[in-house]
Length: 219
Image (cartoon, rainbow, N blue to C red; front, side, top):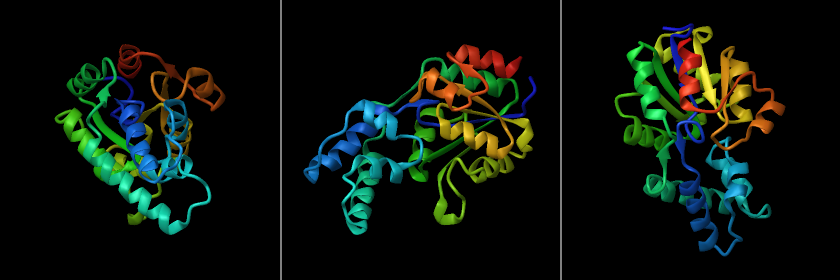
């Protein structure tokens, strides 16, 4: 084993390519209510801070709070029912997770996506690989990323000190999350932010392939 006892992963843009299912689900709601549709570039830019932020960015700014709550609820319900249609793990992810487990590392997933979707996707694609998975639970008093609450809670569930965890993500939110939690951070370039953006956001380590990630973790 290398220097870490556990690896905590972001989900969207890190383990799973979820972009098209997210875009389709957002646009179903926008189309239903006659709003302009959003393209892949826009949706990619809106991601990273959970479904509430995603819909706030995608919807017109002048809608009422009551209408927004309705649209958000409809989006979450539609997405949960259709979140496996185009989604798939990125290349090399399943072999990577298998090797990390073989080497004795504990594996967690921490995402700002709403909690039922996180658990459903992890069960679908990573059953047997993940020791703990958690999505957004601010109603329970656990602040979403980049606050450290979610990753610290995951580390506690795994029985590992934060300094013995590596955090892996694809966005500026993940870089801040790891910093706030006192964890080392890897930024992957295959997700929703490119290498130049991540460098400007303060990425300490950029990783371009699952094999490169495996070598870094187990060195």
